[in-house]
Length: 179
Image (tube, rainbow, N blue to C red; front, side, top):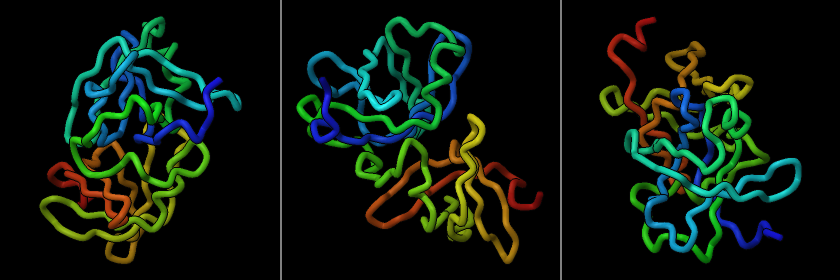
């Protein structure tokens, strides 16, 4: 039986990618560096359940696409969306590849712990702070007070999350802030 104290949080699952069972995972941990049988562990109905990695590829600086053994369709992996992803401490890579998402103080299975984080765009600088996290859909949205009005920013646009500095750096598409 897997115990919570034997696990290290590395991030969280976003949404399924494509139709072949890949799911986006927001993490700064290099999953390819996991020793032993590479697996990601999630709390499913109160039980820490391992999911063994079939394939893994980097999408951008803070998001990777991961597929698990025996989960070969988008329908089979969508239940993981929004859940905290952990790995056994004994299998942890010695070095993180970027930032420090693995120590992000997630509360429950969602990203509510992001409330209060500063949002910084790579081109425009400081935009504001996270006021709320909407995780009702597969695309997790951050409510940010930008120039006196609330805007919604998809968490998938994050390029890095720094828990010590409580910042989320992102790369918004051209024209996003003018909408």
